[in-house]
Length: 216
Image 1 (spheres, rainbow, N blue to C red):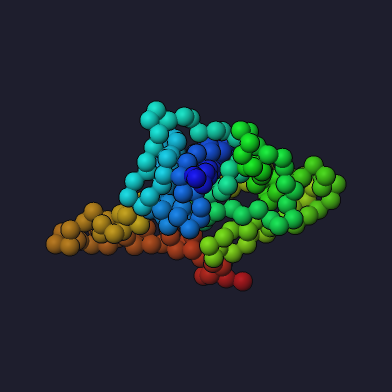
Image 2 (image 1 turned 60 degrees about the vertical axis):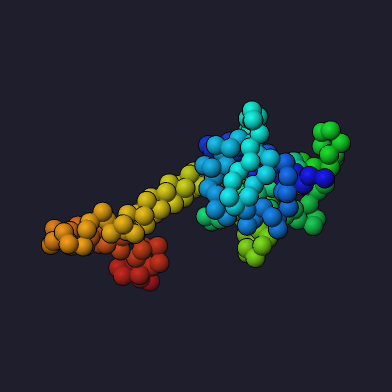
């Protein structure tokens, strides 16, 4: 019997693509299998029979991913890209259990955003603290907020973080290639360029880690 799962990937403000996985959706298989794949690989696959470290076995023709306003668990497991790694989102023990899903599947249709990141309808008059438990050794992430939800701010934050991750990955790849400079061709112009880059990065790290002129 197949263990079905979904992979939720944010593609825009209030838009999450849910890519279906038919076989071996349990965390012990999925987390190691997903480790070498990036969100863009999963989006391109569209609908997956099985994820392995070597390949994404896709349906042909594939169905389009379901686009939902927030991450929603409709099958046995839900996976998300958080902190530059894949994690499985486990429901809280005291989370409300919705009815059976379509075709008799007990999917729970667990709305991750409501249970973990957003205010529930019956909690709209008070502050609250909710916890998203990330399994496989990842720490729990606790979010505290007032009555009004901050969906737009959260979407903007994630978009800014994704942009930063892309820039850091490109810079790291360029550094690994010695900034496209052959050792025999290095001159003081190259030194000046790298020194300038380092000074710009130092401004960021000093601000982020409260060092240098930003030290408290």
